[in-house]
Image (cartoon, rainbow, N blue to C red; front, side):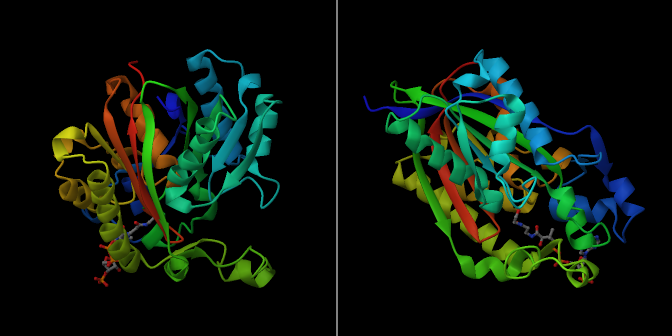
Length: 330
Ligand code: UT7
């Protein structure tokens, strides 16, 4: 049997500070009923403290991951950090995470595919396992969205939260692990969801700061339309491609951007709520973090051989789906 890449452990990290809808009501012109009805979000976590970047959360997740699997950090061959909120523009946060962990045998890189980052990272990481090049690849998905959110903009500040998750990929010869993936991108979507300044096309100046160009800019309605169609389409497509009927799918792991997008995707796949991972009410949209954080929370309920579909849509635009067979019982 061919060697596949299987997830053999998953670990998440969420900061302690809870930002509830009730508190947001005191900050911007919004209310709990609107946020709950339009997004499904009740609260989100925020990483507080001076000089605390994404790596703080990622290190906790990867350290816990290695402890859980009983491996030394020196065994990690490669670490891929999927994020849009790297500690610095350069160097890569993957390097910082490895340094803080003492993972001296690993190399790594950051991967920016916004909310689809974890799908892109999992697919990329799995290639190094499938070819036999490496035995242990860590894929981190996480974002400190609070670092790029304007807390006077009610259209975006109610949606996003901070958090990170990590998985370990190892070779599998039982036919388990990542079976298939479909990844898509359409750069023309940039206009609807991006950060205007701070990159090489528009470097930071006093003016860009004054104009609030370092925050998330999102045309929510437009993004919603693309997201709801493409996430449902690609999820149905990967099922058809792999001859999966609704009854064959144990779990859908959807990106947590909006409960209405999740519901539309599940409906299209013919899945009822009992087989859909949803924690958006507690953590909001953690961008690259949503998928590993769901897997982490549901890990005790997952069974060896379960057919799982991960699916996401995000800035870029980027979107896609992964079909994997869960490789272990907890
Ligand atoms: O994860 C990356 C990809 N991102 C997504 O998938 C996000 C996709 N978009 C969405 O989830 C939704 O579009 C939002 C949650 C961002 C917004 O929901 P919506 O139902 O599309 O609302 P809208 O922007 O069309 O606004 C509807 C109304 C407007 O008022 P009027 O013009 O109808 O009087 C807004 O001004 O709701 C108003 N509104 C709010 N009201 C209370 C907008 N934000 C708020 C708010 N509280 N926070």
